[in-house]
Image (cartoon, rainbow over all chains, first blue to last red; front, top):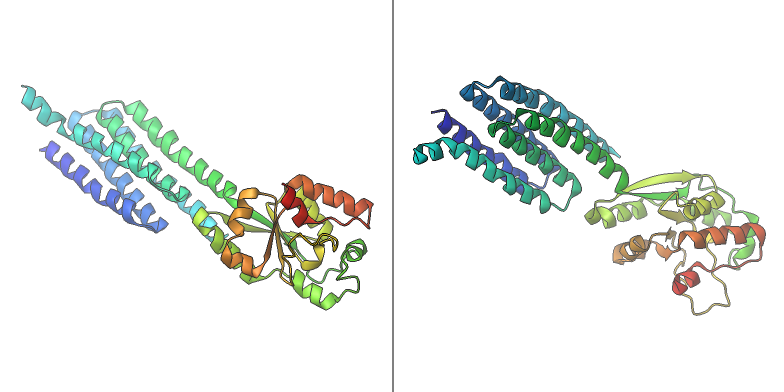
Length: 84
Length: 243
């Protein structure tokens, strides 16, 4: 059952990857990145619950929180580049 | 038994297959900023693969160092390196130095109003420059300089990649009839980078401004000549021809 959910999540991951590949706008790519980052961390959380492995769960939580912080950092750098 | 294992491991195979896919996407990106964003996707997928394979510590390191830190540092590095610094005269009403006026036979009796207008940074030229370098993902950064000598020195000292010079700052020797006379009232764009010169030489920009190539040591020599010998007549286009 969890395997089926995981495979569905991975297949859903293909949508933002495809969009990141085709879109030319940098902000659309950033959106795709945030989508992939969130989906991946939720998938890792699912794996951690399935295996009852806490260390993997901690990784998933850190990726979920810090990944978004990194996205903000990158967005700020890109925004300043656009202004300059 | 084997079939059961294969069904259990199926998500691992699928998620691992995404890794070369996103790696190929990074490779085929030409825009460095787009490549950085795709690299973020690759990092997230790699972290997922490591986590699914059971290596929580490797996954955490990939997410924090490999993705977060590397991308931020690369974004700053790309932003500061992919830039063309263009020096220009801060004050367009600047009076031409006397030794420079003495150099140019045409401006010996200078028309200061015309020269002042010529020295002003033309926004259409800058816009055209930005458009020319857009396919190469280069930004234009304008660096103001107080005088012509400072402008020349900046080019000689490799502080800027190119300078926007008014007409009177460059003088062609009247004896050298073979050298081209590219500046018929047009502003001058002088660059010390050969590749930038090749790109700027193309059509839309060369209509607006006269493009000249001058290596950094030539610029330094010119500056020495100007400051020591006021009668020295140095032709930049002539030097370009010899290089």
